[in-house]
Length: 76
Length: 178
Image (cartoon, rainbow over all chains, first blue to last red; front, side, top):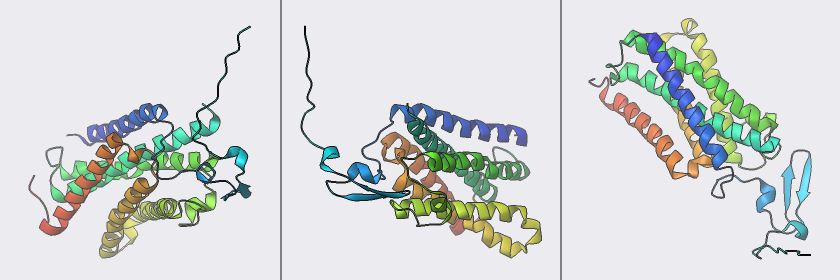
């Protein structure tokens, strides 16, 4: 096979993998099983997390909970 | 989609694309030595393909790093991508990425200086690409958001296992039959 065809096939394969990823990733934006999670999302009450340029201390107001979400319907 | 989410998606897409490009580059390199892809073309054609694919990963890896630097949620600084094991979280996972990036950049520069090196020195330098790819694979497994998905894992682990088998066969058995 000609070198140019091989290069074209390799480029197509790379682009194909990139396009397939571009279709897959936005459809799976969040992944709870991802090995790395930003520190603040997993921090518990009072825990601190270093960020670029400072430290974030997580207070009770942003503590995660298992409670079901509260909703209300207003009818006039 | 917010700007940070877009950058996050861009980093993941470019990371997966770069992994694919590197796997093809490694496969084309091993193919020259094992003859398993002789049906595709002459050794000269495979060498031309290998030289082409060894730069194919660079724009995607650059985009992967740039998107992570700009993504404020990822919290990856410039020094974290250059200096291994410096990141404030995921130190090992991100550090392996920085180490493999440093190594790959050094190997790519070395490839352009190949003619100025002694053949045996170049051979050992070139063999370091196997180490670099192993580091990239570990970085992907330990930090890749999509590597925990079975479909993505099947492809990425499959590519790594195939390359490992070919590399091992090359070391143990020399040039394989076509």
